[in-house]
Image (cartoon, rainbow over all chains, first blue to last red):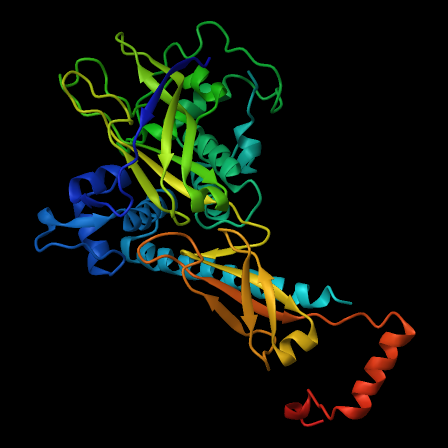
Amino acid sequence: MTSLQRTIETQVLAEGEWLSVTQVCRASQIDVDVVIELAELGLVCPRGDAPQDWQVSARELARLRTAARLIRDLGVNVSGAALAVELLEARHELETRLRVLERCVRASARGE
Amino acid sequence: MEYRDYYQTLGVKRTATADEIKKVYRRLARKYHPDVSKEPNAEAKFKEVQEAYEVLRDPEKRAAYDQLGNEMKSGQEFRPPPDWASGFEFRGRPSGRADPEADEQFSDFFSSLFGRAGGFAHPGEGRARGGRDHHARVDIDLEEAFHGGVRTLELRRPTHQSDGSVELGTHAVKVTIPAGLTDGQQLRLAGQGEPGQGNGRAGDLYLEVHIRPHDLYHLEGRDVTVTLPLAPWEAALGASVTVPTLGGPVQMRIPEKSRAGQKLRLRGRGLPGDPPGDEYLQLSIALPPADSPKARAFYEQMSRELPFNPRAHLGS
């Protein structure tokens, strides 16, 4: 049963935004301890001195959310999750570059 | 609604032990998890597997489910029998994993049998509670990413009624997509998440923006790459060619002695930003077809008069 409730005009906030640790924990559904550990492992590089003052970029939030899903759904431990996120990103990049090169080859063949 | 055969989903017999079920679940979760899986429909299958495991891992839920009998097939029309689950008590998730989004994603079949299993606050549990953040995904075209635009999103969200029950409603939100977003970038809409209870602040809505693959432009960050086929003489002698860019066609100079695979750069012609991305032209050489006597004659002349061994480095 769906009902269209209301339409709201809303302005999007700047995308290069920085989020506090509290916001990040809520958004990714992991404890601050896990965020600290993932920062120590280098998966995210928050700015600020003490963890309670840390700010995480919106882009790095995506990495945290992926790590959180792997920990929660696949039972991966924290260091494994950090490694997995980096490998997944590397795989994505390689696939992207491969597609470009394959397209290049196909385009060359089109002359025949 | 439709019956779901959870044993079939996991591929186990009705007599499977808890251990066997757990083993199978771990293997299937790994196989279909949307973050790692390359299987088609991974996300849908993962949800099915999760739902099946949610029921079969819990002795009480499994016992209740088994009571429905083993004669129905997945997809069959189904109604829960009256006095369903009397005597059974369904707890919330054992590990206290509060994941309201996951709850929303269980099928009608599951909800009709087990209700909303945990995750939502019960009435009276704290006066003011901040609303949870919500997450949604929006897919846009590359052109939209370049120009920016306005999008209306329909979000399915649970809304809490005053009596504590939960209804899934559709909520329309107009969002301004700024120009120059990159694939996977997140936008935050303050206060568009779950409403707070009492004086609690509403949660935020995080939008993960994904840019659909484009036929012509290949996107990496803010840079785009276009494969540019050239005739052999254009590459060898140089040429002035028209190339497409996101902002419209542009005239560009191909230097002489260009080679296949080389990349030429048009600065600032990618997605806008600070700094803006670039457009790369990946050169490829297209051979004119040897499909006429004149064309063949040209090729034969080239083979006679141009000394050229592309396999010299292979030792032939």
